[in-house]
Image 1 (cartoon, rainbow, N blue to C red):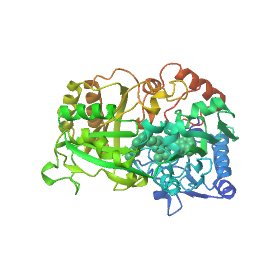
Image 2 (cartoon, rainbow, N blue to C red):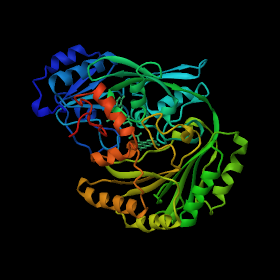
Image 3 (cartoon, helix red, strand yellow):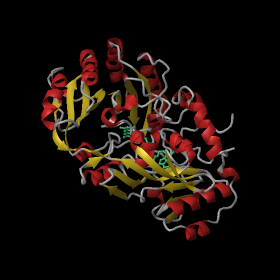
Image 4 (cartoon, rainbow, N blue to C red):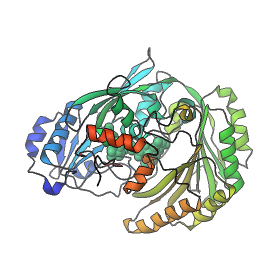
Amino acid sequence: MAPTSQHARDIPIDDLRAQLTGELITGQDPSYDEARQVVFLKGVDERPLAIARIAGTEDVVTVVSTAREGGLELAVRSGGHSWAGFGTVDGGLVIDLSGMDSVEIDAEHGTAWAETGATAGKYTLATAERGRVTGLGDTGSVGLGGITLAGGIGFLARKTGLTIDNMLAAEVVTADGQVVRASEDSEPDLFWAIRGGEGNFGVVTRLQLRLTEISEIAGGMLILPASPQVITGFLEAAQAAPEELSTIANVMIAPPLPFVPEEAHGTPVVMGRFAYVGPVDHGEQVMAPFRALGKPLADMVRPMRYPELYEGPEPEVRFATGTNFFTDSLEPAAAEAILEQLPKSTAPMRAVQLRVLGGALGRVPNDATAFAHRDRGLFVNVAAMYMDAGEKDIHDAWVNGLVNSLGKDGAGGYVGFLGKEDEATIRAAYPGTTWDRLREQKRRYDPDNLFHLNHNIPPADR
Ligand SMILES: Cc1cc2nc3c(=O)[nH]c(=O)nc-3n(C[C@H](O)[C@H](O)[C@H](O)COP(=O)(O)OP(=O)(O)OC[C@H]3O[C@@H](n4cnc5c(N)ncnc54)[C@H](O)[C@@H]3O)c2cc1C
């Protein structure tokens, strides 16, 4: 049984505060309203009993033990970018790792130890100073903890694989308050499970990640007017490109951004994002098939330092809904359906994101980690972001309608971009034997389901 606040015994907050090196923030503190916010979904309005701003692994042990012994709900937050708004909880305790964000680089061995509260942007700036990076996602403010444990599909997916393919070890605080090291040689089952199984198995405080020597790249954004031919042509070009190129195609209604010509505002576009990590002087050649698809509305692909990929404004979001699936290709009829459906949504921001996979990501066997979608060629993510909680049903219906019209083939999704979902949807994200294997490890490392505010893998049948 997962703990519930209703059954919580009285928690001696002052005792907990006294045991922590970091800060414990409760409703009496002026910083409470800011501290209870998750970062991405500004509309999430839960009121935790206390938020622990963690200063070190010992603080995590203390809070985990307090929650377990007191029967309190426990939420874990690194970068606060959960699509589901996990990372906070009414009446429970929050482990906020955002202050634990140091990055130590071992340039000689090409690795880094990073605390999980570091953002993708901070981590990348630190490592890039030494001419090396690890592939993370497309957004600088996303937390290293959440993205890595979900899998991490990003700008180097085709060249170096997922973030978890570059994870060498992790320090994990398990539900019983033990601090364990998970790697191929130490607790290998736990190491398998945390590479895609999210926060189900414990609080990961530090990660050892492999670095790849990359400094200057050809990268940035290319915006094309959208048509079915441009969408399918983009995907064909991305599939045919060398694996040094990873792309993200956002099919969306053009926002009124300063670099988008005014006459294109409100029209459907393909906003492509590119990272080519081969020789920079080949960048023009690699980009040519994309530029040939139509007259670009904006072309900002250029030689740059890798961390520049994370520069630029991030959208203000209150609520979001979305779902995703893996497939191999997109039929022209599906491209037409996207363009037909996009104008029908009333969400201020909505997009269909298409990421061509393959390369290094696809060479890892499906059962090597808990991310079991290696053999699929394309990731499709449909999302709507909106301002008013009362509109949830409308936007959910739009997302689901569009996904259905894309011929979702039941291949399951990626937990990193899932909201709060039912067990069937979560199970579909862990196909084949992955689900059973994850449950086995969940029974071993968290039999009472202390860590259940996530895409939950239940230890026992419900
Ligand atoms: C704008 C945006 C862009 C994104 N882009 C990408 C992308 O390009 N590629 C990609 O793969 N994903 C992407 N994602 C998805 C993202 O990886 C997940 O939402 C991820 O969970 C966010 O991590 P976080 O640490 O910021 O979030 P948090 O809200 O802090 O954490 C999310 C959940 O992960 C678990 N968790 C977090 N940290 C820990 C920890 N240290 N120990 C144990 N459990 C933990 C907890 O269950 C927590 O509730 C994106 C999300 C957003 C909002």
